[in-house]
Length: 385
Image (cartoon, rainbow, N blue to C red; front, side, top):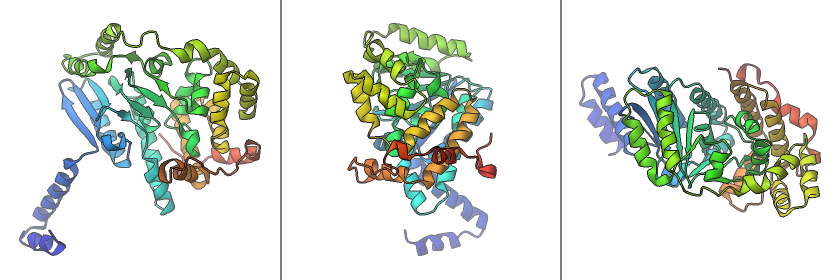
């Protein structure tokens, strides 16, 4: 239908209000044909389904803007007893925020880079403070923004297909969405290791690390969800009871936890330094195949990102989640103005040559002064709760 046809159609309506209603409906039907996020009331629960399987359910600004008000509505609704969030397509819960779109928006001078992180972090905080039990089914890839949608909730259910990582130092960013809060609170120095290397935790290790609260076989997830939806006015304890009964039945990969059994001592000793340079020296001196592998990985990362990340976690270890999100918002805005984020997105997601040219290229070239500028207050533009 051409524009003239639309106008002809609209001119037939005597009332402008009627025309507006029609336009609204057209817009809604276009929108609901392929909604990126499905929001449904089912049984006793509100169910959020991230619905961009082709893009591994990457989180867009539009999705954030649909989830947040619905979460708030369900939280207030006396008929909604719990909230479930899951990903469509079987491959991913959510592989991260739509960072390609953010980088492109920055180049065209749009305010997307301010708005996206502000609204994403506001949603992360709403999940953390949600008064209703919040159950994230983190089946499949769960990275970056997907971690922010799950890790702050009361219940996180991993499966043998779960793959967790915060790989941001490899694209000139840092593990945000509250990474500065939950990572330093993991066992020993595990969070520092995950943050700096982007190491991928799989299956049971996601639960063992404390990122997930429960572990269930993926083939039982549908049954688990149906059982949760069928509960009558459940309390958080009732929800926990169901999750625990499914976890008790799970025999899959029970004895698989190589990372924790073999490498935790090395992680604790190598990553307990206060500077990235010292961590690198510790890995070099350790000299084991595991340590040398991590050394190789760290040497590929953005030097600026590595330094920001270590300080982010050290400071975040004694801050509240809201204080951490305020700090991380400052960091995102500085990264958007810097070189490495856009170069990282180019190398990893656009040209895919996997060889970013970082500036500065060496750790010793990232000065304390540079670092301090990333953590500076934004004054009236700061993120507030």
